[in-house]
Image 1 (cartoon, helix red, strand yellow):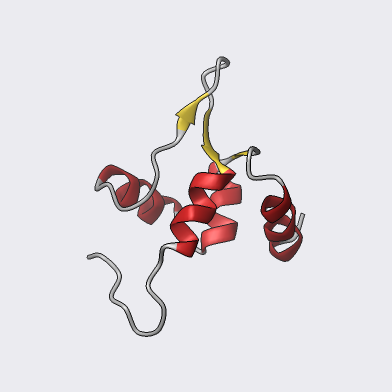
Image 2 (cartoon, helix red, strand yellow):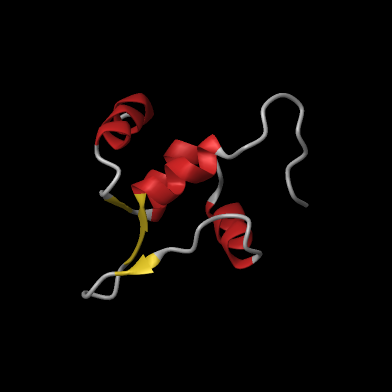
Length: 77
């Protein structure tokens, strides 16, 4: 599934659970940056499914995106 199609799907289904790869496609963050941001509290933590997999709730990811500063805001270091 392409990034744009995935983004459109998430906008309509915010209860969906996303894999790390899907979150990286949506946010443009690398795996390392994603985990670092989550560890530092700058990005939502993933949730553990009953099967033990880590997944992000689409509404958490979209909330993070909508909460980003517009313009030339600085990203965390």
